[in-house]
Image (cartoon, rainbow, N blue to C red; front, side, top):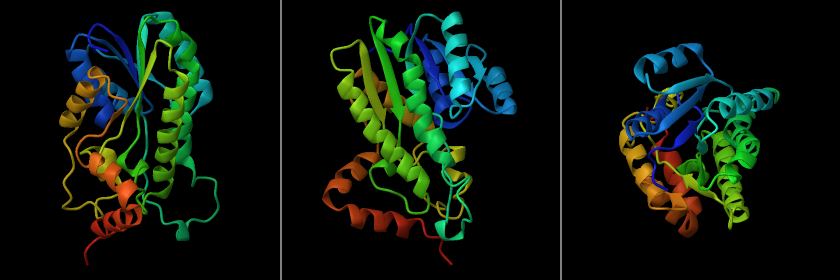
Length: 254
């Protein structure tokens, strides 16, 4: 699918990878819609990307996803592309967590959110001559990162779900693609991992999105830029060794 002249919805499009998608896809002549939770981030996007349409919506809340679907389709009935990008990544020591009320929050945003978004918009996408769902997972879906256990589990689940969705969409108008980023220079990547990732290089978000768009237009089922390709290979050849190496690399030096 050529990404020009399309109407595209990006969840979590007010920062990081999502905002860079919005920037590049808008510049390519697409009608771009983004969602975000925070009012301040939404305000900044409206100032920075004036051609982008912004909706305040929480990608983990079923009622907000349903409201988003009604509003988007009433205003932009030509919608044909959804990029499920919204996500959070936390640094969690499971030995120090008391109770379970908050521990699984990443599952609601990183896994349940894309599934609910897909189901909410699927009937509409199936009616289009050509449509696309892009799920943004992570290299940690292939080799888990022990310091972010719930994020790793959620992204592994999204990887499995995307493969199943792709299989079920065969023979329809809906193309399903998974973007599996390596470590990318974003607020989420640095946020809670300033010590762990200190000195570690990450892919520039502009480079990542450029590679992602090229992969989408080349009709790739899975797009694994940079080190994500290495993780994919090592997850099959030596998964325990690779997980230990990631843990070692991210252990803060005294």
